[in-house]
Picture 1: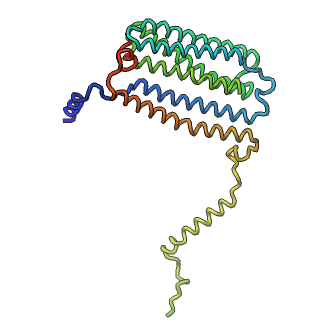
Picture 2 (picture 1 turned 90 degrees about the horizontal axis):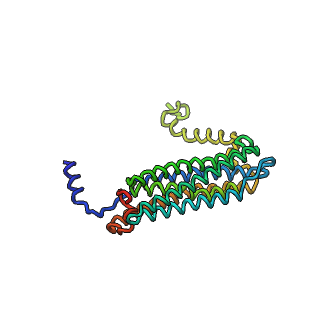
Amino acid sequence: MSSSATTIVAATRPPSAPRIRTAVAGMLIFVGTEIMFFAGLVSAFVIARSHARGWPPPGQPRLPVVATALNTLVLLASGAALASAGRAAATVFGRRRALRRLTGAVLLGAIFVAVQGLEWTRLLAFGLTMRSSQYGSFFYLIVGAHAAHALAAISTLLWARQRLARGDLTADAFTATRVFWYFVVGVWPVLYTVVYLA
Amino acid sequence: MSTDDHSRPASRDDRRRRRPALLATIALTVLGRAAPALACPVCFAADERARASYLDTAVLLSILPLALFAGLALWLWRELDRGRSGPAEPEVAGLSGDRTIR
């Protein structure tokens, strides 16, 4: 009885019935939780800094503001390249163009993570560690959490690139992947301003 | 034979009637003896900068989830609205649906 009723409903449903893109919806909900995660970290950092006598604490190295600003531009360029790839994928027979731009976005993202890693090795050599001070703990926690997200997002972009090259990447999966990378790109300027500049 | 009510033992109804007064007396005694806990740093951190930070982060963490829920609701509404308005244009067809990108 109920299965026949379902069949009738499915058969009479108009072809333009509302459809939720579940992959994109799921990614948006996930990104929402990630935004709250970073908001919690930033809040804890701001409160710890407000209680400190001096910030950065005496004897601790200063963060590389200019080099990271240039690296931020690289990350933003990666986001722009991915947006361009999304536009190319939306056009008819735009797969090859989308593939080239997606590859560019992945490379720029990888450059960003590599430069961050180089910065970290220099800061560690200057004595800024997780245990050296609250300053170091928060720096590595916040920037490290972002780097982990960047690596995860680059992995998903590589997966999308592979599927796109084979010609079996769905539009919804590509949109969901892009949403994750846009989050990684979009949250970084906020973290840079709070951790490096303020 | 005189009947003196005061000499009678308290009945169950009397005890039930006195219970709120007894509880209030206990609560007031406990509250009066309790020392301030000072668990919340805002209450004892006299630093104005710290208080401003607490206020800013409280506002951020209160408004952000509401904004996220509103954004998701808006996206869902637009998604359903787009579905009702008919099939997408051929140029933007790749942006929707579960078809592969060609």
